[in-house]
Length: 198
Image (cartoon, rainbow, N blue to C red):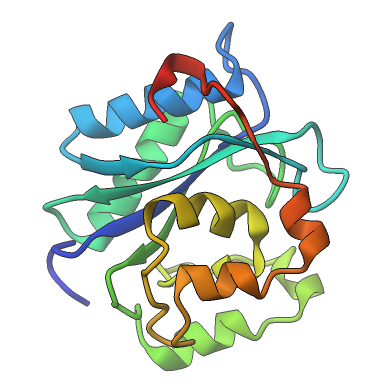
């Protein structure tokens, strides 16, 4: 594993529950400010999108976005930072894929495959029913299912369309083009993102 996140880090953001009197989109804006205050350089932020809850029926629609950032620490330190910011905004990790006041997913760091290609392939190849029950105990990068999720790829295409998946060999634009049209249609841009930062 590399010592530092010296390549661009790709981040997915989402929320479908208010935190106090703050709406989900507002929480995303504040979370980005928190990351900047804690040593992350925010290079780009996508538009905000309204997306159906995943899996279907898991609560109200989400507000989703993507961001590119730079960070001077290790990947594990960055993950700990993301979890800390989530907790600050009321995130409780009681249910896998449950409703969330804030979700910050580290999607990729440059072209790194962590911890190795064999482990990545194991998590990538898990059957869907197994994915709902177990989560890895270590950081897996790129995110094993980012290529399957329109609510991740469509925002990511705003900020990193040319990023190439180091295992699959496809760019974000390529992966977006391979999505089912009905999945793409469900991802609706929000014309005026809360806080005006996107």
